[in-house]
Image (cartoon, one colour):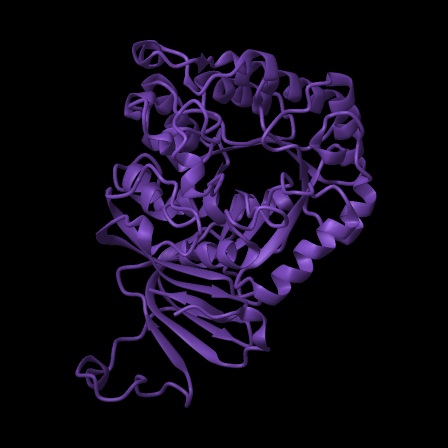
Length: 451
């Protein structure tokens, strides 16, 4: 079931019973009952035993539950603060044939996300108060999840003139980014970070040196040479990551490195944190799941930027997630039409969809093998993104807005792109067996998705 949270104020009471509640804000990791009333977390308490009559299916609610109370059986499931994705492309306005705010919002709800940040590389770019207002107003009407617009650093994403960030913030942006590219003019980038710092906006940096990318379509290495495809090297990411970290040190700006994919960028981030710089970073599920060995040279669903890297880079990403160097898991959800991806590795656009596969890949590749704990998953997919944005989300504390995600970590299934709510079908994970299914997504006390 999928519903729109904006249809009215929720006054129902929801009883989430006997789930493993994971709240990084308080350190709570234990089996609890969670009560939701009027859109807020009302109470977290030790679970009561299921009544015999409930076990036998006698009545919808357990004895003692108030009339009209809705019960969600979460036994064996994780109950986490609603997931937050810092890095989503909704393609709206201008490229709605790929995705729009409504379908992207529905995909987010199905994926367990209650808040998403939509990137600025739309058509027109999200570089004016008018475009930001359009995104916010449409999201309020049609999206089942909260949508936070990200404003462009430069006008038209052209890398020549800074936007009026103050006006964009007044209209509701939560961050700034030139995502899809880097601001190559270092002096302009520095001024942009200074302005973002003055406005207390985090800068989300896509680290890619334009000249060093030089037409590459995959990672530069043995696989690209074997396939005869142009590659771009790790240095294309590492050089800009190093530059932006230095600029963050100079300006005092809060810097977040998007989709880290190389061992070098992880090490740069680690070193920056050791000296106390306000720098954070994220990894995407495809970068800790696949290597460039997965690229066959024909299927452009394996083409993304940054590209799938070598095995050593994947291991570095996993270590960075485990030791806290990488703060977040984001999707870089980037839908494209089937005809665009059919153009092949050389001509197809970069990007894959990720909202509806992120939870399963995180559970399958990180949690079940013991790379990270379930609590770390909650930190990296909810608590830390909320902290980076500076929003009052990412917690299940009593009194907090009831954004909740319920996940069954044991349920096994096959990823089927044809079942996606997203318009995009461009995924390299179609047909992959995974564990970890989102069972319920609740936004402000209203269930917006139930499996």
